[in-house]
Amino acid sequence: MTLKIYNSLTRKKEEFIPNKPGEALIYVCGPTVYALSHIGHARSAVAFDVIYKYLKYRGFRVTYARNYTDVDDKIINRANEEGVSSDELALRYIKAFDEDMAALGVELPTHRPKATETIEKIIEVTKSLIGRGFAYAAGGDVFFSVRKFGEYGKLSGKNIDELEAGSRVDVNEAKNDPLDFALWKASKPGEPQWASPWGQGRPGWHIECSAMCMQWLGDTIDIHGGGKDLMFPHHENEIAQSEAATGRHPYVKYWMHNGFVNIEKEKMSKSLGNILNIRDALKENSAEAVRLFLLSSHYRSPIDYTTESLRENEAAVERFYKTIQRIGDEWPEVKGIDYCVQCNEDGFKPMIDAMDDDFNTAEVIGILFREITKANRIMDAAKSSGKKDGLIELSHALAFFQEASKFLGIFAKRPEDYFAEKRAHAGIPAEEVEKLIIERNAARKAKDFKKADEIRKELLEKGIILEDMPKGTVWTVKG
RNA sequence: GGCGGCGUACCCAAGUGGCAAGGGAGCAGUCUGCAAAACUGCGAUUCAGCGGUUCGAGUCCGCUCGCCGCCUCCA
Image (cartoon, rainbow, N blue to C red):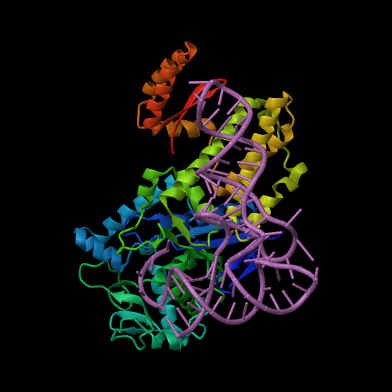
């Protein structure tokens, strides 16, 4: 089967045929670094992280660029409010973003360009646009003439005349047409600025992505991604600029847009005050549960972040590791089996088919949990019959999990490590728990079940769950 | 007003022409000193509604209702 990608430009799933066979050039719009990144940034980053990993897994040589927009009105405003330089503010939030990404297990892209390091290219593209008659300088500003680009609106399905009719765009005196957008802006004193043929200034909002994309990947690329909201005007303008500047099209072969994250059924917005930062989400939940939550729905669907849904995903992660640990404990011989992928290629097919169908991670996760149930069933059957039937199936399940974790970026831990991490977050010191367990087991041995149950209850109130296993009592943290 | 999307069990969610995945919650059972975990069973004669195409539709087409996003900075 071939890889199919939903292309926002054609609104259809299309077979993925890169410009150069076996190679994939992918650019994703990164954050504008003026504040801590929120769960929406996490979704985009995780979605494209999986896409990046899967393309590599499928054997493509992938070059992946994700930018930092580090010069922008919002950065300037925020820096002024705080009385720091734009550079200092941007660097602070780039660092924070990188930390958040690392916490979420997001792999570093091949290139992570900054807008401020791409000024030369921005100026070059702007010059080219003026030279080709698609842009004009007015005062110290340079604007793109939207009407000169005949295909304007092809990505977002907008009609220029209707746009203007219902325009809420500020009418800027210097523009020839209200629809035109700035490629270059004259800087006010104290603002970041660079020398240009049009005087001291800074880039407009959309140009930096075109320039970074061209500089690091080329004039035409295979995949360009970002949040759904970027389709218009950002990506629409990018197409116009890039194709007009180079005369080459398509600028991008496949446009991909991820859906939004809502918080308790509401859109995240400043006015509602419900912006959920990644680091706050990670205080309440494990990174793995957050990642599982993000991958449990298709990347294009909107998802709803709720306390309840995160708790569910946390439980699912625990169920997963519990089963893996059980396999290790009860069937140590499984590890000795070298499960041969080649001779059982069909074994992975459902998972590959799901991913090939526009990166259907939700389907893969469904398959994974079916394997978990199957594995537990085999082990239960062996327990009651005394015969260990199903060695091959169990080794297959383990191979399956290992395989999926390569591109999902979850379920890759050793179960011991998972549970150790969890216990480290208990609200009570481990030694104390261990002490109470010893006390309780002494009581159990003496058949003093009243005392034993009291200790269980006491620990449960502190969020500690005890499980009496054949090998002894183990404890875990609730939730 | 224009463009786009969605509506599948108590909740989340996959499935886009051939017997309705999976997770969570619930109830009952096996196991357990009690629990927990795991397993087993139960739970949508049905996919917002109505019509149409088809041997066959959650899946395609049309209409209706409801929800949402974009059109302004936004992942």
